[in-house]
Length: 338
Ligand SMILES: NC(=O)c1ccc[n+]([C@@H]2O[C@H](COP(=O)([O-])OP(=O)(O)OC[C@H]3O[C@@H](n4cnc5c(N)ncnc54)[C@H](OP(=O)(O)O)[C@@H]3O)[C@@H](O)[C@H]2O)c1
Image (cartoon, rainbow, N blue to C red; front, top):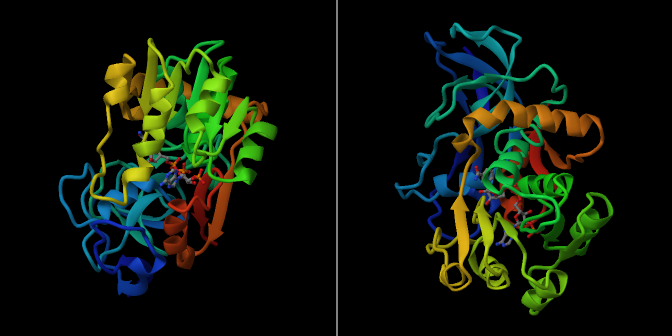
């Protein structure tokens, strides 16, 4: 009989900040594998803001709720240790949803993605979740190039700019020849953006005169706003933009903890004649293989710098997801296993 440790959800949290005690580390017995199932040993877990909406207990989110007492699930890179699935053999490395556990049976509760083999060009497992991951580099690439259609000489503002998607989106916009202004919450993050990642400028989004600083940087108004935070910050940015300008909405992390989540004030969209577009990389299925090729090439050639904040072991997962909402990460928040 095989047992595994796993991270369980202790209670639902409709609103408010995630604290690490929202989760408990516990053990369970694993049932025998059935046809179509895989036994996975996760090597690295992706810590993603999208999890917040699965912890509220309120249906209506685009992903299913995690039941109280059940294992938390998320994207992971895993090694297949046993298989009754025709497409995967023991020893394969796959990206899939997995329980936050030492051992996880696929498919876990609420699966929305088939397991995909890790591209053999990707040697470090965490990179299959970060710079080469669907919710990392691939989101940034399709967001800037397909949704944003960023061109040379344009002025681009990126929020959560030192995070996973933002740090890559800003660099990809510079590769396209744009000037990029990043918004980030600490002096250290802003220095990394301008000194290491090639951003033209970086600002503290908490500054009372944020709008004036953006106007000083782009007197005609930015051409594109790549937004991962939403809320008041985005309203301020949008008010500095003048037609014709575009907003690509990647995420709204500043709103996920309150019950006004998903509410966007569109006054500046109307008043300033802006185009507001929500997107996911899955809207551009034909562009995904080329996006991965570009990302691999840019990283190999040093044109794109992937950043990761790595924590270690199952015990680190509750603190890692809590820390994501406190700005503790630079680049991709990742939890690796031995
Ligand atoms: N559309 C898609 O398909 C897609 C795919 C992946 C991710 N997303 C979304 O993209 C966003 C970024 O995801 P990610 O994985 O790249 O996370 P991330 O940017 O690596 O991490 C989140 C960052 O957001 C900032 N932040 C946290 N709370 C904030 C608040 N209340 N106000 C302002 N900034 C805040 C923090 O940086 P500071 O220190 O700078 O505050 C934090 O480091 C999320 O909203 C996520 O849901 C969307």
